[in-house]
Length: 122
Ligand SMILES: [Zn+2]
Image (spheres, rainbow, N blue to C red):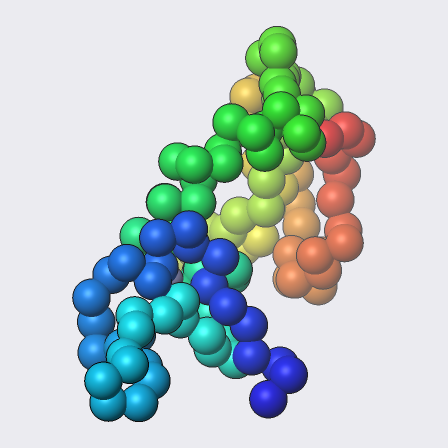
């Protein structure tokens, strides 16, 4: 049972659902949800996810690094894989630059290869 993990929502135990109500008769308590799989990563649902972010979001951003200036997606790294259909109803794979609208041919294998890129930055 060690692979069960608790929802990290700080208010999870305060939500009145039957599955949270546990314990012997006369000594029941609402308890933090514990699951082998949590649908929102560390949280049982969207409400608990939001509760955590509302309480700790600012601290987390400060801890992991606050963005203090705009990031830029340049022409060199604005390539995105996409496809269109030709007159024979075949897929035609292309690399599309979302800034210049330049298109370059792309093979199906390159399209499916998640490591293949012609972008040169972040
Ligand atoms: Zn929860």
